[in-house]
Length: 289
Image (cartoon, rainbow, N blue to C red; front, top):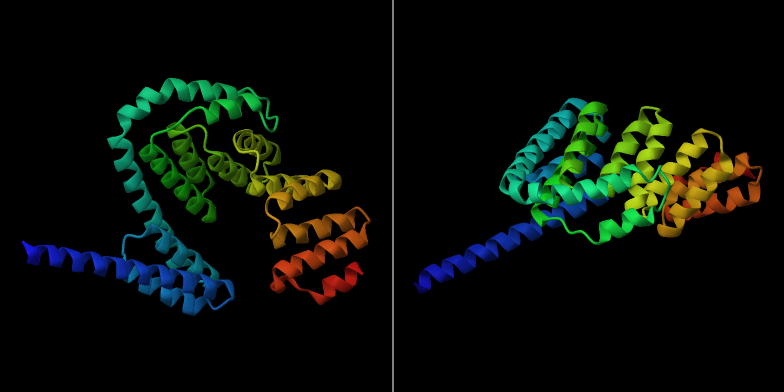
């Protein structure tokens, strides 16, 4: 009995050590990828994957790295693997929790009615109150999250309808997932369907009013429409929530130039470079000056 207990303890220690090793390899690979050392990052992701072959996070990161390297066939293969694994996990979770999801449907429909009838006005207070007062089963939310990972993968492959279908599956489980509306809006925006995208961004903000990524996306739509003041206002909202976002500062610099505010543009350009030195561009600096 004692020997069995010792073996179990040793086994647990080994599992913990493997988990630490995997996490350290992922972290190191992320850092390498961020600095452009793509080949080295891929090697570390592959090493981590050997230790945990079914880890969809690693597979997805590896797919992104391979895409950055230009190895599109390998990247697509890993994207498909991620999607297949997530599909299997989601279906298992949904089947186990089908009863609780069915019992929750009436409440889901009530919230859906609120969201579908706020006329795309941001910060719908009624919807937010309804959302805050309702709790979904944890396993159901886990399944919905897996569908969102699928949607993200499909979007990166530019498989628009498959991505939208994945969002719809997530929203059938929980209609109060702002990320689902955000991704759906991203898909439509990438397709050039700006008005429709704005509607889904409104849905996201009705649920989660402090969502910097959505404010930035709305700002970029206004910039595409050449409505510079609106674009700058929404970029400012994004920065207020995420003050170290270099890319948004750079967009704000461009918009400020269109508003004939070169001094403001220089300030935003400085902030962008301060947050991310790789955005430094002498030619752009002198053109602003």
